[in-house]
Image (tube, rainbow, N blue to C red; front, side, top):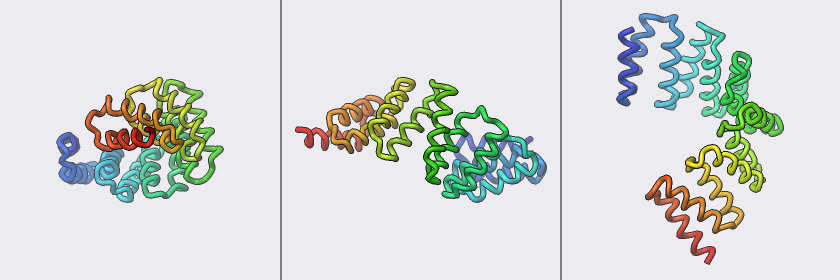
Length: 219
């Protein structure tokens, strides 16, 4: 379809407003094509951060084809950013009914449950992910983040270490660990994390400044 191809080409070159126009033209010609609404919804969600408009697109997808899990998953993501956690949870549950093998959806569900204060259920989701695929980095990061948020820093560090074994080049993990070490006043360990971060992202001013600050505190 000509307009769909034009929309995708515009996205490649960051011409997002033009892409949106072409998606609308494509939808006018094929109003029952769920993939057009999905592509438009993802564009609104990812590039415009217009989550309410994205949800309308995903709802249209579901009206056309109610048996595709990714529509519910994407809608749940938009509800998450709107802080509408009950609706986000409903979407993730529906997505998992349709495809319970998507480990990313289990993590998304766990994060929503954590926001709703249902911490035991959240932890069950993260543990399930790890049990299904111990090499899936996001599972360990989700569990580490859970303990970081609940103030159990030693457990958080333990699970961040597991994540680093899988992906030692994840500078986000190093940053989160450094924050914990700093909170615990374990300054040499925090400095080491920031130094490793700079090996991956040289010239970062924040981490450079933190090393200087923590070196002064630990001297």
